[in-house]
Length: 115
Length: 114
Image (cartoon, rainbow over all chains, first blue to last red; front, side, top):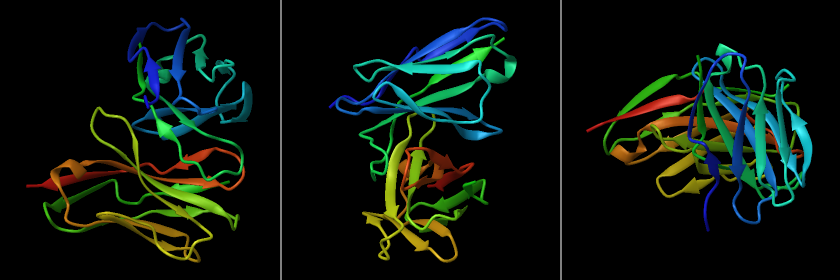
C-alpha cells in the first residue's frame, strides 16, 4: 500500500505570494492533518480534515487554510507569505474517526522557503 | 491545554548500548494515547511505539520499550542494543481519546556512536 505523498517536496516563494501544498493520504484513510515543523517551535498542529470537514484547527492566522476533497486528498493554502512561514509542512493521515486509537502516518513533507 | 515536554534536546549512545529518552506530559484527561515517533535526517517521520493510557502494561516493540507512569505523567522510551540506524530525532506525542489532534514535544536528537 502506498504511503502518504506530498507535493511538491520543495518550494521557494517570495514574501506576499501565496502557495498551495497537496497531500494524498494512504488509501482508505479519511483523516488528514497538517503540521508546521520549524527548529524553534517544533511540530505545531495546523488543522485536521475528516470526510471533507475541518474538525480541528490549531492556533494559526487565517492566512492558513485548507480543504479536503471527496477522495480524501487535501490541500493547504497559505496566502500573503511571510518570512516566518518558512518551514517543513507535514501531512499525516489516519483512518479516523474521532475517538479511535489509530495512529497517524506522516508524509515526507514539503520544504517551503520564503525569501 | 495539553503540553508535552522532552527535556533532553540531545542524547548520545554507544552502539549496542541502551539509552532512555524522557517525556512528560500534562493533561486532565484519564483516557488518551501516547506515541513515540522517529524522524531520521531528511526522511519522513515513522511511528516507533504506541501506548494506550488505560493499559497498565508497558508497550514493547522489539528493541523499543516504554516506561509509562500514568500518575507521574511520564512516558519514557528505552532503546536496547542501539544500532546506527536508530540515529534520528525522536518525538513524543499525546492524543486525547476524542479528536485526532496530536500534541508533540520538541524532540530529542539521538546520536549513535560506532
